[in-house]
Length: 408
Image 1 (cartoon, helix red, strand yellow):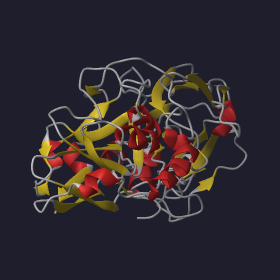
Image 2: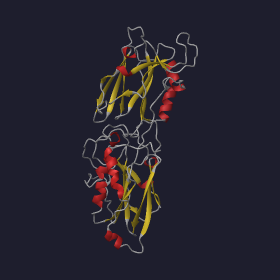
Image 3: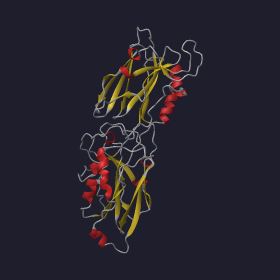
Image 4: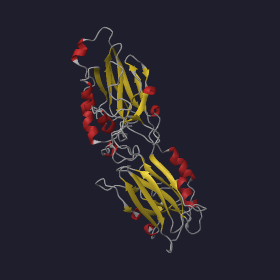
């Protein structure tokens, strides 16, 4: 699972600061009593990676819902640098042809990280599915190939617009085949954006593989304009995933969690650095000087990919409490932390005590598809909101399906 690592230069530099798995004060060590104890806390990333971060369908407004010459449809989706949009729709006046771009999809950002907008019709291709003879309609078994001698960009116009704040694109597809030798309706279609893990797309060939035999899902689209099988497959393989940052653990006295306070603005002592970039350094150094803090520990020294875990031990005494925090890596400013006070002598699974919070310091974008996220080397656009629990604006997996926290 090492391939699931979210990349950001800030995080890479910051995690070097996790050289101290324990930063207790010498004075605290000197005062440890015979009742002191040591525990081990583990943070495990248990999210199930899916091929696509977003997917959906489009269709015309008539009956049947085809897209006739002169008509247009639009789809809105989120994406960051390195991600692309793949779509597919049947060339209706054929036995088994379909429109789609080259793999992995329509390029959305240039080499400098700027969003590509305007006419991108040159990205579309017309493909022969290879499952029916173009003249007789008899079944055949040939690989998917580009249809020769037909300029797909003359039959279909593609236009992209972009909202930088939300990192959302809108693709408008217009049937411009009217009056050409290849006049045709377009069938209902499908689209998808592949998940990105910081180094590569999880699916670099969505829907079909050129020069290889087709599959049942794209065949139904190419032969009948039927998207049902593809929608079922996309739904099963679409979902938000994330990496986690190294986790900071603090041992303290009193009833006030020294890391954050729900309903209050970020205190400026370092939580923002974790929530936006996974950088524990500032908060680690700040907490060591608070009077009620007895020790600060960091679990891990690199991003925690799905299927991976990090561990640290901590020292405490009866009456101590612990708190912890780790970044929801594929976000603009989210973090996991314990919502309830936790006795430092607790053992077992703490996942039910863990919640996902919005630090209120950066404008949210679709998780894993926002160009201002650290995942894509971006910097969140500033906002000044109070710390709150993450709501249901995005289909984020339940906390217990992403992170497991245990103490032994």
